Image (cartoon, rainbow, N blue to C red; front, side, top):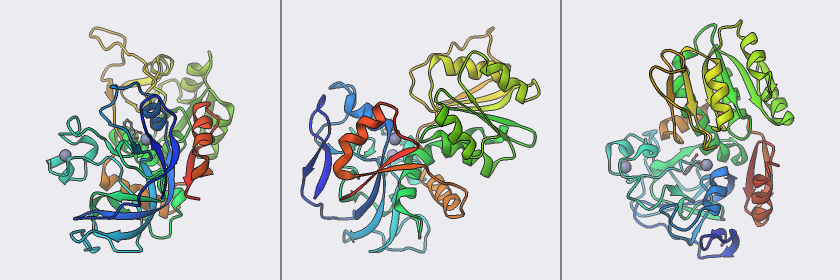
Length: 354
Ligand code: FEH
Ligand code: ZN
Ligand code: ZN
């Protein structure tokens, strides 16, 4: 089968012919219908040897949807439990952050915070283990599969990472977004445009959005933001005015650099919540006494949980989420990587097996 492989550190990923896997034990083989391309894939490809605990060669792709093609002899086929169990032909999205499968976190579907994630040598599909930028994906257990019904795979795949990561970040700050509140979304790309929709769909809060790119500000407004503002010298004043001078109750920062941290701290109300999702490498000095808002809370959420993925899919199936995608054939993966590197992808890039 065709697969986009990272063969060694420092080398660009390339399409290669590899054996189609055969499921054993509790494994499930999924025929891939769509695989999203994430900024983290670029970080993996660009990583220096030793920077990540992964050992190439492996297939990339950690946001994947498709159809169950075959099951190992011990795979869970009980589809009535709602927490796993599958059958041949079922259309599914794959929960990507595979953990050890034995700790209490993994048992609760919180593999993203697996107690042993530092010892595994991988972080999941396409992250040190063979992923879904391929015709088939071998999944360790049916517990990592979430049924998608008639949701298109090109919508479902990005929801397993871009969608789930945004949803999990919002879950940590949602308590601050009651009546009369305001949320600020910084960075309206593949994750941010979904976060705008999720805030609108699951809270009464007003949504303000900021990005350096005018087309991203437009995407924010199309996604339901009440106000979209280009990042500039006047941004903080314009945003504060929009909140009647009090500031925002929560910031979801999908960039995470010095400028966005400064903007967040300038705009957060006392008791405000800052969730940093973007890996922009920014630093924030936390000191008392200091200049952060009283009651300031910071979170660094990572990906999300399996139960949350089922909630994201339910929102999408109810028509509350739409993923902006740019689709590429699997064979054009190198072009898609290049476009993502240059910031030239509108929404999320999705690869489709040829
Ligand atoms: C995956 C693995 C490591 C770092 C970041 C990520 C994200 O893309 C998951 O959403
Ligand atoms: Zn990712
Ligand atoms: Zn675990």
